[in-house]
Image (cartoon, rainbow, N blue to C red):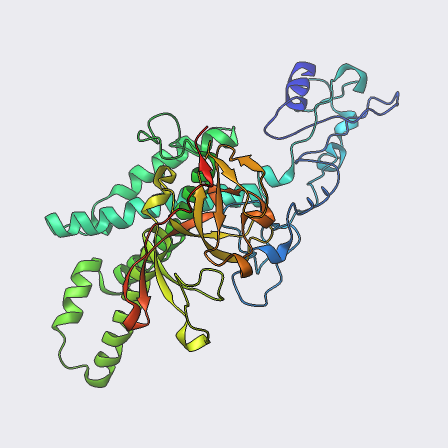
Length: 416
């Protein structure tokens, strides 16, 4: 039984440890859980006001410091809050422990000196924030697959998802996955087959994809919850419910309002997806890009531009592109400037005879109106990871509709 106790004491799963007590009584005292005291909260690596929150004016908890992808400070019930580690004294579990003979129970009398202590695992790795993030990510991936699968199977075969019996398969897979003790290995699929196109090879691009994944995962979980409620209420699949609703011509004003709400919601989701992934519209403020943008002063005459994001794939930019990017000095601010230099270029400074070589992963940007432009001459080269898209067209006001011209100042750029 001494061997059994030693094995339990070194278990990395239950986090058992015998403290180094100087006693001759042979009393076994172990702590089950994942630590002896509350772990200090991690300090935020960036200001909490430097990121969007789930509700305007909301205050993010201290432990939600923005280090997790998709962290918007949402934890109204405090589920991710670091908790006191579970502690149990074996004597409290069996008052006759000191009287039991060796071999009668697990955790028999063992001298402390015979047991090697092992470090505690953080409580959060099993029950706290990390575990909830793991569950959110896995459930979200299942929900994305399930939403697509439910609609596709019902469309092709007429079989609804609740009748397909696939939940049992999912349950078996999840049972096998949770048998893995390594938190990293539990976040499957992973591996070389999960990203065959190499989309996440660039660390900055990987961070963008991780954020997109968690956003889509949350949306899919809400969608599949709707599928489940519909199935419980009607016994039909989502497409069948939709078809039944469209055939109902007797709902009067309620039906009209529902149709409008549905269209607004649908177009809103489409708009969010397009804005996040493909294109968006941005307002140009100020005169730093005049006369290309805002040739006339006045807020009502400000230009609005179409910002396409296909250029973010592999960061395909050209000299003279006008790009929207987050300020290197304050990521909450957005600027629109023209790319003068790309990685490896030598660029002559605007107000001196000095030249600067653009480092890899950066670009040199300037405004078309040097007298009122805060650009790379002030804050240096801009990381390409801060670029949010390329301004391709002016879409407002109507009389200024047209493509944005590429142009590069002469005599200031050299490749060697």
